[in-house]
Image (cartoon, rainbow over all chains, first blue to last red; front, side, top):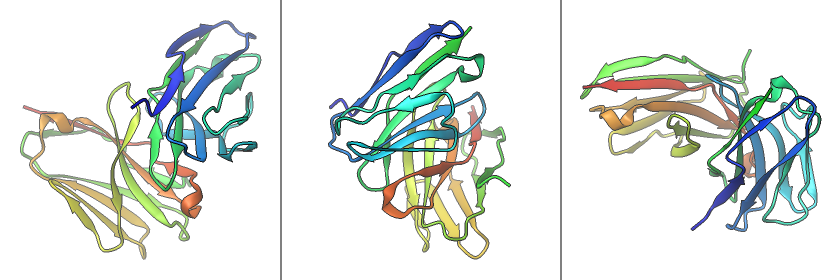
Length: 110
Length: 111
């Protein structure tokens, strides 16, 4: 009964480093999303995908990249990490209108 | 203007109180509406969908006013366990996803 699984849960990066946040879902959902949530704020959409091989930008895509080679996986790549990317990142998937979220990845860039 | 606006609170209420949260959205073409609940340092989870006719789930009642572009959530007989942040969420793109989240309203229920 895994649902949406994100790794890692916590990570500290140095400025300029790169990393990939992993997201996998086992519900065969076509739609997948990456959000970031800054303290006291709502979720902002970074990238989304409507199916394998298809991705599109959300509200705040700068500094990030994604790929969707399979239905199950939707990794988020941070290139040249900056302090402004310190945030909590949530991956989500959906079949109809309800979105199911992973437990989040806490990222700090120092 | 933000697409979805909520009063961030916090709302501090005693156990047993009735509390109401409001939310406005800017896109008159919005199609679907939801309330999500988010506990501290946890992921958001769907609380309930909001239908045009209004809907109730136990102590929770959601209402939609399309003319005023306004959504509400009423919680009756508040419990300590209701303490959380409540996110107003709007879908502008039909069933293809892309939910728009409000910043959330924080509720703290005190004994």
